[in-house]
Length: 448
Image 1: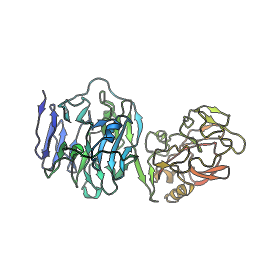
Image 2: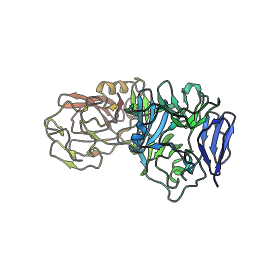
Image 3: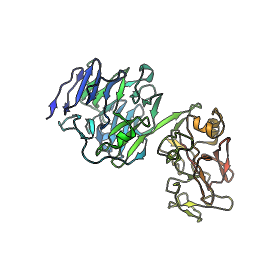
């Protein structure tokens, strides 16, 4: 039977539907779980489960554009793009994600969760907390990492210094990879929804759930790979924190996808945390799940980059070959395109840039600066660097695949005569040098 509860310390103008769950308030913290356990001291809201996740407001892209006066740190799930979006000082941003698994359990979830909505609808059975709205979002605590004492693994906040979403991965604070969408919004927001804070303040007008603190974050359900795979019929956009990988993951309706994180290196540059096409950050130099795809210099993502793509010796006369085959070339200048085009991959708006919006192929100078910052030369230095570059192998001018484990090459955007420069890594050496553009090499994107 549904039990409607009004909760002390919360400013509530909307309905909370509780189905036999435990919602506990301990001083200035709130816990949602099935055990009655106290919340972690670093969390303003601690949502715990190993069988269910969390759902935040889901809406179309058009509904997102119509949100009124969105607060910095406001999150929604965009059902049009199937991506999580958040609002910051620049406008709406999309969080990058990468497929990791399509495993799920069948049947109906345990239910017994909590719903926050206008209608009084019950929560989705796969969620322990289901926040629903097409007019308001989910607002994270707005603070900075240095104000939080002893953060729990998976604690998430909106960082007001960097205007980005950060979480603690058990050893350090990392920030989610994101890129700009637009700054569409409307004005005239009305009263907010549910507020969780220590002061009794009302929720921000743009939020269905507003968790406010300057010294605490939010904890989502934490679980292992095995526990995640046992979630029954996960709802699209269900969020969990994976303790096996120390990553946020969500169900897109077809697969579990991992939220990408940016890496800030010793050079001060911001990079993606994995190779293009890789399903995860490298855990070792020969981690095959971190190898990713192999691109011919200057080509877009069209299928040729897959390690199993077939070959053709017919050169392309345009920037887009309009097929998914790896083009071989055994004679000079050993390029897949005839005539050559030096304008490919030049900058964030460059022709055929395969990186996500806001990212680009690094220059040779940028790759060399990273290489020079390593503590060791060769594959050990590459793997122990913040970029964690695996030895992903390559494809030669004839399309032959070196499967990886010993050598790797990472393209730059820099041309050198008829060739292009790349970072070559072997077991005991590394160097940035020119190669034929027809070769298939790894790509690691840098933020513009």
